[in-house]
Amino acid sequence: MAAVPDSPLYLGLDFSTQQLKVAAVDEHLNVCHHDSVHFDSELPEFRTQGGVHIHADGLTVTAPVLMWVKALDLLLYKMKRVGFDFSRVRALSGSGQQHGSVYWRKGASQTLNQLIPDQKLHRLLRDSFSVCDAPVWMDSSSGPQCLHLEAAAGGALRLAELTGSRAYERFTGNQIAKLRQSRPQAYKDTERISLVSSFAASLFLGDYAAIDYSDGSGMNLLDIRTKTWSQILLDATAPGLGRLLGAPLPSTSVLGPISSYFVHRYSFSESCRVVAFTGDNPASLAGMSLQPGDVAMSLGTSDTVFLWIQQPRPALEGHIFCNPVDQDMYMALLCFKNGSLTRERIRNECAEGSWEVFSTALRETPLGNNGSIGFYFDNLEITPSAAGVHRFDGDDNKVSWLSPQVEVRALVEGQFLSRRVHAERLGYCIVPGTRVLATGGASSNHAVLQVLSDVFNAPVYTIDMSDSTCLGAAYRALHGLGAESGVSFFDVVKNTPEPHLMATPHPAAQQVYDQMLKRYTRLEEIVLQAHCTGATTTNKPC
Ligand SMILES: Nc1ncnc2c1ncn2[C@@H]1O[C@H](COP(=O)(O)OP(=O)(O)O)[C@@H](O)[C@H]1O
Ligand SMILES: O=C(CO)[C@@H](O)[C@H](O)COP(=O)(O)O
Image: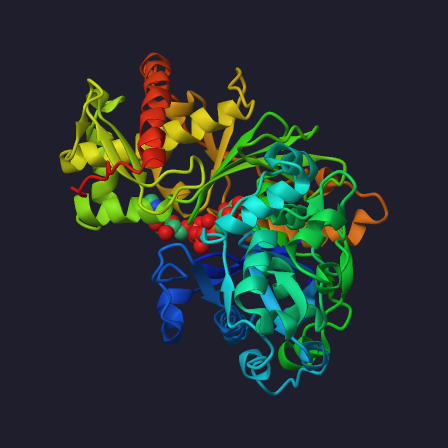
């Protein structure tokens, strides 16, 4: 249905790892506009690679906060330049890469409250952060703080039962504890700590935005049942932390009207509402209108697998988050750090830097790769905790080299075998009718989706946009306006187009991969043992 020229619009923004993206939908949920700012190429002055700085220790990973602010200036400028009519936006919401933390310097709230419309945000806010480089989800440098938090909680499983996850290095509480210990003055200078999502919401609100329950579940601090900060965990993390975080709010909350800065600079309406921002994976769950029984696979910088669940059953692997669209529900998530950037490395080394050649390699190699299997953990992996590149031939012998085409298939099959093995460990099982919904940058690659379908032995679907996060944020903006009066999220999205079927499993897939899943599980044990004993099994790239 064509959009009526001055009908209301709903805006969704996504501050993800490599870029800032936006989508606008009309009241029928048609996408009317989308755009993005790619950090590395469009803001080269920040010298990021893949949107981040990897420090010399190989464990610390940060991103410049002002880069995100400048990206917003640029994105809104681009929208204005093409004539986007901001006055039609009735509500906006957004999402951010999960777990990252932003430290607002004392006095910053006053600056936020009084933003001067004829200046750019990145100029106005240049002195507003006590930590210039925000720790982000790729960081794995807070191991000692994780051990401390688990001890304070009464053990890893107890912490998981309380917060949905055992202690993870990238989870915000452990990052805050590390910052407080390593940079006490910066912590003292801080008046508020935001997640990337609530930081971005604060820019639009002109005031500190609350952390929402769903993204707040990725901090190792929130009791996912009572939806309040756990005082024991706050105390174990840093002094006065409750005050610095502010109270968490339901993900559907309307935070308030948009700041007058945006009204004057971009002609937003004064009545435009800001709905709580959330994490990128929770927003993606909303964008794909995920239903119970579906499994979502996000193929962005990280690969994530997530599900809609009713009852939280936290375990030592994986995460349970509060559900972003229904306060009484939950979502389960597994995160794999070596996703798109590892596929890019193998593309560059084995496929002439071309996705087309990469896809041809997948098409020209057989299901099961004649037994060759690979584990590609360029960076210390999250699920499972292991590092290095490990290749095995069909007889389970370690090999140091695979031909380029075989290497491409070993990588993609290995990644999806891992996603399935770990999802099944979390209790997920494939039943007749299971749909795999794929999203994120690599979901535009049909050959990759075919391997996904074969390994999961289930049909794979995508939605119209390869990026479901900003779409989910736009849907959430619309839902936020009605949520308080009891409108359900499913009422809002009931007329979204059905996802498109992209791949169905090959008839031989079940036989090939049932066998291979068992082998993968066994070989993963070997890789993990080698990692724990410090033996080096890293092979050279092809
Ligand atoms: N045709 C393709 N085949 C495989 N991967 C692709 C393709 N096009 C883009 N990508 C991958 O998508 C990634 C970006 O995905 P995206 O979901 O936008 O990331 P994020 O949201 O984390 O910034 C890139 O790193 C790139 O490797
Ligand atoms: O750490 C996690 C989830 O727990 C990551 O999934 C981040 O949320 C980054 O997301 P992308 O930029 O890869 O979408």
